[in-house]
Structures are given as C-alpha cells and as structure tokens.
Length: 570
Ligand code: AMP
Image 1 (cartoon, rainbow, N blue to C red):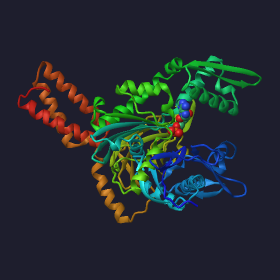
Image 2: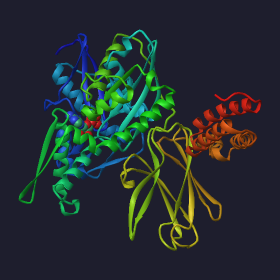
Image 3: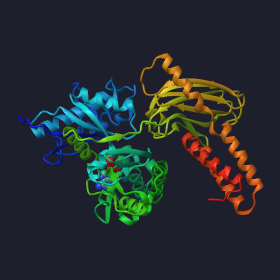
Image 4: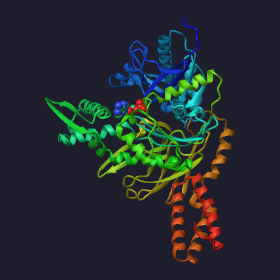
C-alpha cells in the first residue's frame, strides 16, 4: 500500500455526497464503485440485515420505503430516531454509513487507508449539528479535525482566498428542494458569513412540476386519471426534459400512458416563460440576504453558483442579470463544495491558517405546528405551518393567530414540529399541547400561538385564547440536548425578555407617538416623508424581528430628534 498522505474533503449532502482528494496541486473527485461522482445519501437495509448505501439504496426508496432512509441530514444533531426495518437509527449513525462508503471508495481508488477528512456543513448548522457531524465521521472511522461551511468551501474552490483584496461575495445555491443564499466577507484570511437566507421549498423539483403541468395541459390529461406509476413516470421524463434543456435549445419528452404516446416539446425560451413566477420567488431571499448583510448589489465582488439547478441556463442568466456580473460557474456546481473541502483539507495539512467566523445565531431548522385547511366541505389535515423559519436570527419570538375549523369545536390541539416538509407528519414531532375553548361557529374562537426560541434549543410555546385571555405554556427542547433543570430555568429567564411583542414595547410605542406628534406639527413634504418612515416602522414591527426592529428604532429615534429640532430631511 501507498504510504503518502493525501488530503481528503467530503461534501456530506442532504441528497448526494461526494469525496475528493487534493494531491500534487489539484483536486480530484473520487468515483464510487459504480464509477459515479455523486453518491446518493440514502441508506437501505436488505432482508439479510446488510446495509447498502448510494444508488442501489435510492432505488429501494420506491420498492422498499420502510427499509430505506433518505434526507436524514435534516435531523442531524437532534434526538430524532429514524426507523429502518423496525430498528432505530440517529442521523449521525446513518450519515456514518454514507461516510464509511465514501471512505471505502477513496481507499480503493487511492490504494491507501483514509483516516482524516474535512467535511462540509451548511453555514447555518449550529453547534449540535456540527458536533453530530464530527461524531458521524468518528463512527465511520474518520478523524474530522475540521469542518468547513459550504459557502466557504465554494469560495476556496474558486480560489478567492488567494486574492489580496477584501472581497464580498454571494453564494447562490439552488439544489433539488431548497434554495440557500449566503453573503460572505473575506478579508485577511478571515471568512465571515455575513448573512444567510433561503427558501426551503424552492428548488429543481418546482421546475420539474411546471413541465409536468405543461405536459398535462398540452395533452388534455388530468392527474386524477393517472396511476401513481404513471405520475412518477411523467415526473421522471419531465426532469429529463429539464436537463436536456440545459444543453440544447429545444427538447421533447414522450410518455406512454395506456397504449398511447403523449409528447411535449419545449424550447429554452418557452421553458423560461413557464418559470417566470419561480424566478420572481428567487429574488426574495437574495434581497433578504443582502439587506441583512447590509451590502448593496453593486458592492458584491463575486457571485458563485452552487447546486444542480444552477446548471439551467435561465438560472445563470437570471443571476447574471440581477447582479450585473458574470457568475463564477466554471466548476461543475455539484462539485464546488467538495472541491473546496479538499482544498481546506490540504490547507490544514500544510498548517495554513483559514479562519471562519460562522453564524451560530440563526435557527438551523423551521419550527411550526400542524394545521388543517378547509376547502369547502373538505378538511385537508397534516399541513405544516412554519412559525419560526429556518435561518431566522435567534433568539426570537413570533406569534401567529389561528381559528377553530369546525362548528362547536372545543379542543384546540397544538402539535409542535421541527423540519422542512410541507406535510407535518414528515417533520419531527417535538411535543403537543391542547387548550379548550367554548363551542362557537367555526373560526369564531381564536388563539394566539407564540413561539420563543433561543440559542440553546429551548422552545417555549404559549397559547393564548383570545376571548378569555387565558394563556397556557410549555417548554420543549428542540435539539435533543440534555440540560439540567437550572440551565433550563436560566434560559427561560433570558427568553422572558424577548416575549414582548415589539409592538407592545414601551420604547417603540413612544417612538410611534412622538412620530405622530411631529407629523401633526409638520406640513407638506416633511409630513409625507414622516408618514412614509412611520409606515416603514409599522411594517418592521409587523415582522417581529427584534434585531431589525432595534436597528430601525435607533435610526428613527435619531431622525425624530433631528426633526424635533427643526432639522432637514435626508
Ligand atoms: P443538488 O441538490 O445540488 O444535488 O441538485 C439537484 C437538483 O439539480 C435536482 O432538482 C436536479 O433535477 C437538478 N439538476 C441536476 N442536473 C441538472 C441539469 N443538467 N439541468 C437542470 N437541472 C439539473
């Protein structure tokens, strides 16, 4: 066996994972046993009790779903146990199986043992999730001395760390089901994640769905009249058509349904027109991340595209249009993160410094409750209603109002979940509460449900029945860590301060009243300007984001003082 040491980087992804080595100045992505670079992060257990990982396991998601697990990275660092053929596994354990499989692929490719690796994690992973990732490596027989944030890895892959000047850049990561945006500042070997934002329900699958809809309407077909297999077949063909459109200006799909062939032909520009609304949706997290990072579009030095969906030409030109610059996309977007992880491993092995200032003050997952929707006489249940969205700056406190769904409903059950799926039952159930109201016509009795969440994973849920003003409270530990009772008490004391809805806070109330007074005392343009600023302040208060509210309030307070002394408008 070869005894030379080679630096190894791993991209442990939600859907796919990759392993790469850095040797003699270049990064090589290592193929798996099937010769593919992407290994699906899927684990399945066979009838003989053997575990399999990757493509073969992914096939079994359809044939043996109860013996197969996917998307387990989403519960990394939580107490969730995933059932596989009546055995229960943590996310670390399943991730360890993926890591072990990657390690074995690398060992057989390199002809030497692989013992150390740098693994990438999302920028918004908290301490528990990072520790769980290191633990997964440990179970797989790997020493993980360093983790690297995915956006940082992307920056390294494009060599941004070798540039002399200070750089500000944005990572546009559009995958299969999610869109992640990070704004990074790189200065003097220190990479700082300035802001993260995203949309947990926006990714390649939404583009597939638009093609499916176009196919159905072109051929006068309805989903209701198709079998599950036929629907799955159409989705698969739609995805193939989407991918074909990434390399040619027009493409077509054919699906045999019954004994007839149905077709859809699309050009790139027709596809782009179909996707207009989706492209609009991408703008929201982009704006949010830039606003949070306090960086203007024109101040960005670079734009990096990551994730399979950025292979679509329309996404590249969309990103280029918004930021008025050519995005960096010369590296295959599937391979950017693993390339950076391997470079980070080489830097570590050479003892080169690379400091990362990570974000530990964002909520790494969405917290919400199960709700139902009424469509006429049909009640659709199992719908997840997010209250605190993933990536929200923490600590935070948010309140939402809900009404009864049926006439004379007296019990209101509040099932609290953590996760990103639209269906409540596909998320992690953290706990349940129930309150009782008096019987009344549907929708008349309402409750305010407040979630207050802090950096230690303490979630306090309060339900207030609006008609009686009675409040019921319960505390949940959302990240499965164990804390002593005193620690929990300490955290709760800190949380108490947060629960003041910004609207109810005396300081903000005073600013509003002062603003209203100055408005009354003013005339003309000044009056209109004050009115606009006050409306903006109301909008910020409505968002219930304490940090943003505080920032706005400080600015407003200064403005009001100046106006009060007869100062000029900005
Ligand atoms: P990721 O989560 O980064 O692996 O991205 C997976 C998503 O990228 C899926 O929705 C794929 O359909 C999409 N994707 C992969 N390759 C292409 C391609 N060549 N053109 C368009 N979308 C693609």
